[in-house]
Amino acid sequence: MSREERSGIGNAIWLCANHATLIDRDEATYTPAILRAMKAAREQASEEDLLAGKSAGLFAIGPDIVCTGELAQVTSGSWTLHPKHFVAGDMHLLIGFIDSFPSREVEDKYVLSSQLGDGRVLSGAPTLMMKASGNILTCPVAPSAPRINAQKLGKSLALDPKTNDISLSGGDIAWVSGVDYLQQGMQSLLSMQRGENVFVATAGMRFFEYFTEFNGTAWLSRLLMLDVIRQAAIPDTDLTAKAPPSTPLRCVTRVHNVELLSEIPGKNRLELRVDLDVQGVGRWSRELSIYMPTSEQMRERVKLIK
Image (cartoon, rainbow, N blue to C red; front, side, top):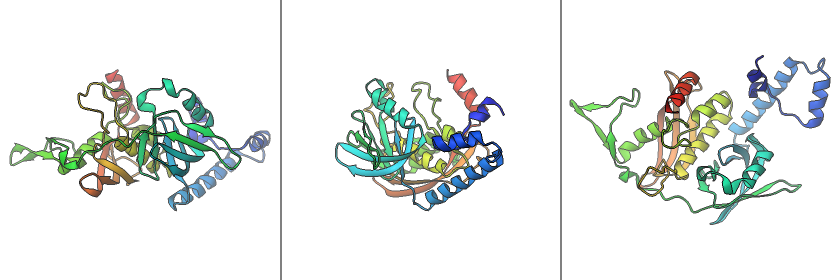
């Protein structure tokens, strides 16, 4: 195995210190085949619980920490969470986030909740209280970001949803505006990967990153949902914009669900179904075809920008 393969998540199994030592010292009993079977069985059981709704929701604290847990309390100025298991990051990283909060970039200071389908900008450093009964994380939050009525989204050239080419109507260039522009605008936004924006390095989706790390697991669609929540709830920090800060998905007030319709992109397209609350429209559900670059294409695109 290469060094990357050995350290990859596919070659990892989570154990307590005692059982990790036991397995390392007894290669005859705990063969690679036995360990892979244990890993597969545990992941299958966790996936069944997750899909059955037995697991707690997912939370993101900044860009590097994702954990399961329960939302214990919501006030006008704070969210209180009970974090349980880390999907990305760990306790050490969470404590580091709290310690370094004053010096972190503005765009990294947020909390997202799949239970609420919403998120908030953090107005101060979270506070972590460790108890025998479980950890308590209190997050000071700013008020909800303002949204606009979908009818005021403006207009743009109409694009073919599959080819992304400019559409024609009776030989003339077609335009879309307001609610009719919502699906096209959302599809374009979700197709822009993090690192591709020339002006704002942190802008864009983390779909490629999550797809690379979590494809084939029950976590993938939940992580994609968190990233859509981020686009709906957290204002961007585009310093080139003249208008007041707004969320990238300017009219989405809640994300109910993001469902992955295909595990393998076809012709660089990943099929999703989004279920949202849209200001001025209400409940809004659509299937979207999102551009998903290959690893080589992603490397080339980022290289060109840099």
